[in-house]
Amino acid sequence: MDHRERRRHGPVLPGVLVALVLAGLVLLRDPGSNGARLRELLGTEERRAEAVTVPAGPGAYRFAATQPGSDKPVSWNPCEDVEYVVNPAGAPAHWRAMVERSVATVSAATGLRFSYEGETDDRNFTDRIGALGRAAPVLIGWADEDEVEELAGDVAGVGGAAYLETPGRWSYSTGMVVLDTAVFTELPADGDSYDDPDTRALDLQTAILDHELGHVVGLAHVESREELMYADNLGRTSFGAGDLQGLARLGAAPCA
Image 1: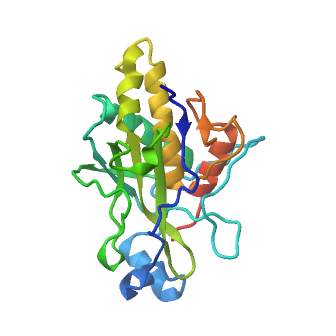
Image 2: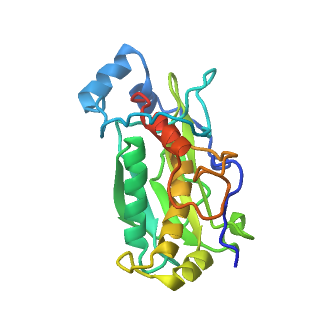
């Protein structure tokens, strides 16, 4: 079986570009004095983790979306945790260690802090924003092409995020990663534990999740084979120089 980490173009989730209309929530994101005062009272002015220095040198990266009239990226609010849940149905036995490792990698590269909110039976991969604009946590799960048609063919995973159009600055508020159950069942044939001396298959699996979480935090595909965000990765297992530059820039955004 071809295990290329091919992804569909367009990491932003379809149909979830939402204009936030609730006055109270708009106030939290209002760049004016009232909004700033409320954020101060709620203790949301400080970053949750230290910003990451953008690495120097050559590299290629591209943002999934940019702020209106600007080349600055749409990003997550670094002064709030990125909450996520996992639906382990169909996952390999080592899913917990793999998710923890991948989340730690992306967190270290962005300076964004992730918060694990537990397991869930939620399987709504296509609409992560509910009634009245309330965003659900990022969902990580496994499925097949019968459930998620984007996994058809040699697609090993799909990931993306949704952002809210708010006054002043747009910010991602939720997202999802869905991984192909068959690929993650077959790949561990040469090592099924991170303690195993031969962890090449596990490294490839984690790289797939790293790639999809790259979409979740705001990166798009690039044309360079030197980057993990290349659409048809044929074996790279870590972020490249350009990936790391883009991830650091996404995490360096101001508080929303």
